Length: 113
Length: 111
Image 1 (cartoon, rainbow over the protein chains, first blue to last red):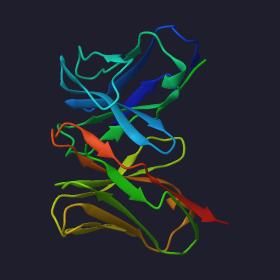
Image 2 (spheres, chains in turn orange, cyan; image 1 turned 60 degrees about the horizontal axis):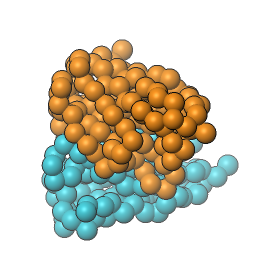
Image 3 (cartoon, chains in turn red, blue; image 1 turned 90 degrees about the horizontal axis):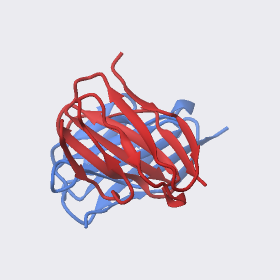
Image 4 (cartoon, rainbow over the protein chains, first blue to last red; image 1 turned 60 degrees about the vertical axis):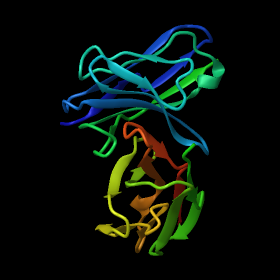
């Protein structure tokens, strides 16, 4: 089954404790991205990757890192999480550019206390 | 910068009613995308529009690409309970590698 898999689905952590949210897709898509969703703000893009070893900042990259060492994986790293990073996070992949359909993971609800 | 304004923010409707929502921008878009997010899930693409004036249907859903290229509309006819969720419009930013999203229209069906 074609899918985007995020882990974990839920995470509660403390301020400053490094964490990684994993994302994997099995569709051989080139384009992957990370979003955060906050009430009343819709989806805001954090980082995106056009292909292996090619990443770029989205609208809200501060406090986040990503890597794309393999085509299928695109982990999101929070080196020192803060409470303002409490949010619902989505990973998405699409065949090439944003003009092609994006497939989303089920989301990771992160709470930083 | 580019922004998408989506309205209404939320809608309370009766089952069977028709629904209309829209998305406007201060700048021109060459593609409009409509996604739906079910509770607890990620968004799923409903309709993609690539040409000004284009009218596209997907079952009971119809979307239109505005002639000015600064707006788009989504209509749902004869709503049913599974239509509840958040509907997002989205469009590519100038770079073609980033999508900008509206804040969403939350659809709630009154029992």
